[in-house]
Image 1: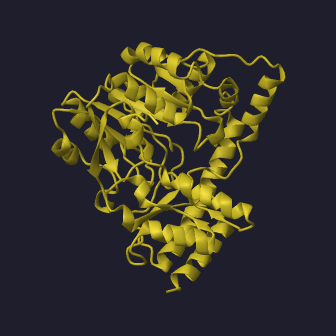
Image 2 (image 1 turned 60 degrees about the horizontal axis):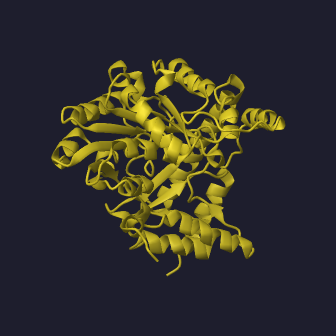
Length: 391
């Protein structure tokens, strides 16, 4: 085999390994409660499915422009204006093959070999591996419950080096579900801007917030016009279109043409049926369905949190967004990966060990997703109790 060095450096996505084991157990007749993968359990809202069906009925399925359907780019711009009072020109919006495709394009357009990106640890694992794929270096910024698992400007200043290109943050974040407010995002942008760096804000879970209104960094006029800010978003989480593989990137205008060239070669174009489905994502009937689901996620969180705490899981920072609880298990077990394997093998409960999310105390933490029905969450707590009571 002639493997590249970058391929050798890419670690497996442990949650997918656990998902594979869960599927094996299910094929053998076991009942598994899925709390591992970051995928809503709801089907794609019917208005979007119907929109795709109408489009496909004609069979006229061809490439779109590499930047996406103009009508969809305009619809996203209207969504920013109507929901967040954010003025975002459609020309700055690039429709992509999922949020991963958006991040790939942002990194490919900006990163030279050896450039460093500062990434919160714990954080979404693919981010650091995508940085490596474009010959950059992912530099971990350790964060913990004391900072609500978000980086402070002082930590950015301390970690910045001559090789640092920029900072990547997420709000709501994966795996912790914590948020950055407008003032905090403004301070982080100032920290990168004054050093001539870039800021990428991952807003993939935008819309899935509880007890606080959804927001965007682009609602601040100064940041919306910044020439060093990229925003990644997705139709997967709030809009429930995971398998359709569709996202978008808001880029500074000066970068759009360069990103277009990359998109032409990387993807040709985003999925045409998915884009036509997404045209219905912002309609009132669809948004009504999505808001009802958001309220259901909030209820699930409120059911699962006390159940886990009663079992001895420590959740020092309550999640305000996404659909994850990042729990400290150090009072229950020595190693979260071992515990995760026990839970799936002995109890049929699939969770994700902290090892997926970085190097800052990963073996003390499990990520537990509340992406299943309330009664299944309570059943999972009962099954976990049985495992924890065994020697």
